[in-house]
Image (cartoon, rainbow, N blue to C red):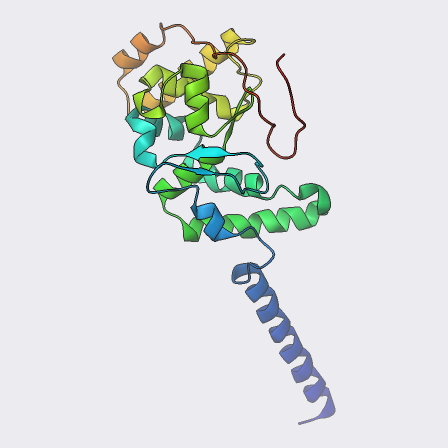
Length: 235
């Protein structure tokens, strides 16, 4: 083999090895990503309390999907498209974004999303997202949010209540019922109409539910905002 061909072969070998290393790091290595075993705890088989999450930093009551009730399980995908769930979960667990460059954070988020899609089922992703989500007014997780906004457990929510609760996730403060009742009402009704489009609710049922008033939260929660926000007292 001529010297030129040997150099070319060496370069090809190096590039191939480099591609393998990058592929391993991107698709298999997860030592620099959040612990998936811990994340799986947010899709429990029975109600439980967790207090060791680095990003949320609070004691949270977690519930399995069957404890979320039929109404919420119907409203949730109407408010938040299932294809976006892994994106939202990835953002909630990559809370060290300030310590990374923008490019490094984007790559970490993409790697996390890829793993989430392969590690968890549809119901598990729903549970992880709903149990970690910030619903506004300091409410973290669907169980706490349901008790705060509706004064009842998620499994006892009516369809209009579930639609309101799920609808808050897009912009919790913008749709906060106490300060923006008109926006909250419009958002809830938009979720109800999307439920009709998805076939989980009839048009007649949606029309009746849209006439119902918006409930208001019971008092103020004393907890820290997610992602390292400061402590807040009553407003």
